[in-house]
Image (cartoon, rainbow, N blue to C red; front, side, top):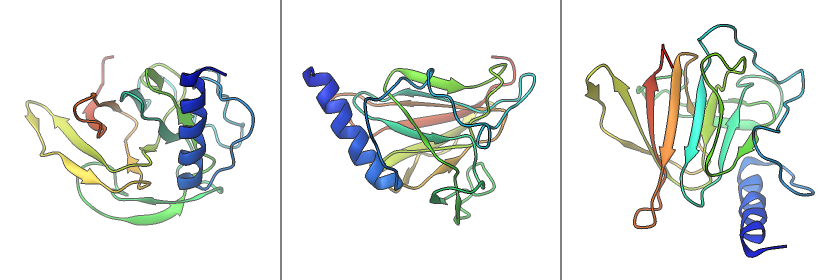
Length: 172
């Protein structure tokens, strides 16, 4: 197993520990991940929430089944958006999204409900021409996105904290 795969496997195991999941075997890409029929959140047309993980060396958890039976999770913005309204709920059985991958989104037929990292991360929302102030979200805490929103998360070698911009994406 190459060094990158060993690091990815180690990071996946650490993230699984945070999310309360058990990791076995090799990891598959998020595009290959097929949530079970009981956890899939189908959407039609262009209203599908999505996530794009461009955070270098950081794996992201995402769920398409927020509120469904499964693992316990804490969502800091239960109503979606920028207002803090923490809620403990179930988040189905979250899937892992590797760096450089994306899933869900408009016209995809799959709606992502929320995402999280195993380390503290920052989130901001773009509304029209204004951007809200970035706020820090605790490690393992979930950020809820609405069906018409897309979250793009980045990091760099100089600033390894994932920074996520959530924007309305009605025409992408």
